[in-house]
Length: 167
Image (tube, rainbow, N blue to C red):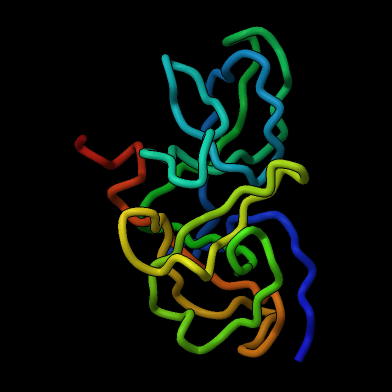
């Protein structure tokens, strides 16, 4: 089987089959996130998530942060909701290579940040419990079961979606 290149998470499709809209929001101070990283609202501005287990995720940055003063720049964001599917690599814990298995489909997973390369991946080592943030639906185009670092389509678990949660 193939070894799939580790690459940025990206928006793939929504259930209606149409392109999702991005919403332009005020960017927090000194934000250096890159397109594809996860962000959330804090004190009225969009900032990068700060851990692998964020309490809330507002969306995925659709452009790089500007590293500017607070609320002086706008950043386009794909807002996480139950209708959007994203694509990302599945890795083992600590960003190690992982062979995608059939049992990885139809299961929740944790996320893990590669802060050195400004990327976010799925963590095959955590498939249950309070640290999961996404649900894996199927293998992505260009990947297959048995591939190393295979890519999958996933959605975010609704209770962590900042725009739709009630607490």
